[in-house]
Length: 333
Image 1 (cartoon, one colour):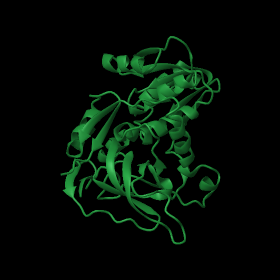
Image 2 (spheres, one colour):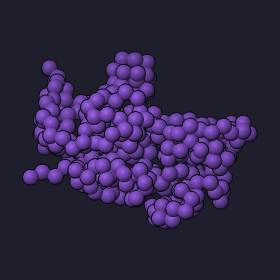
Image 3 (cartoon, one colour):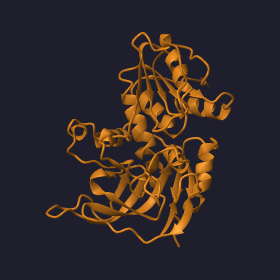
Image 4 (cartoon, helix red, strand yellow):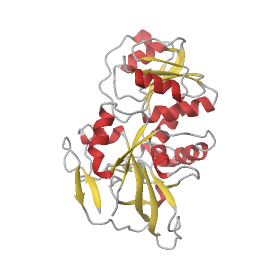
């Protein structure tokens, strides 16, 4: 099979022929139909995340058709052959530690992640632990479903961390933000979009997706915010967001990597403002979000690239050349 492979950080992905993976007990073999591209994939390629499995097939927003499942001894398969399933970032947890036993499996120290410690979906075939796969909701074609599996899931968890905030600011209007704004509006919240200064295309996209106001990240919003969600990996946005939220408000950082946060005066944190991060996701997040998506209903904006153009998709993501999400599709003879 063909796969895009990271052989070494800070080197381009290589399109290679590899043996088809073989599922072990409790795993499914998937025919990959689509795999969305995430900024985390960029962080991996750029060497900003430590100790990836090497060589590595990235990609953790996989939509695939079940070709086979090998159940654990004494158990029945979870999925029928031909079922359409999604594979998210969280690929394994121990199930025994204090985090797992308290509903916080996303913090498990033994966790392994798809496209990081486990080969992912930038390939024609993939293997995944069946316990960490989700059925794809009806009504979502493969391309539109793929971004739900990280951009949607992490965005949903980030929004949940904002509590019952009514006025939400979103910094960085990419794949996650364009889904979060739809959920927030569905919940009756007001959304204010923040984009790079001078990026009129991103500003227009934020308004099109449901933000009632959009402006540059260094601008104050027209009203005090109850919470701010930061998806751009730019540490300098943290002080800007703290200045934009009211007393008692929250700033939630939704990315796995961020540049250093510059020093800031205590006065913009004071007043019981909260600054927190979001780490990974739980399976409960996935079940809740994928049940919610058709009720909104969520609309995903996708930019399609064939597998062999994965490097171009990553470059376009890096330079903000598209709105919404990029999705890779394997081409077969």
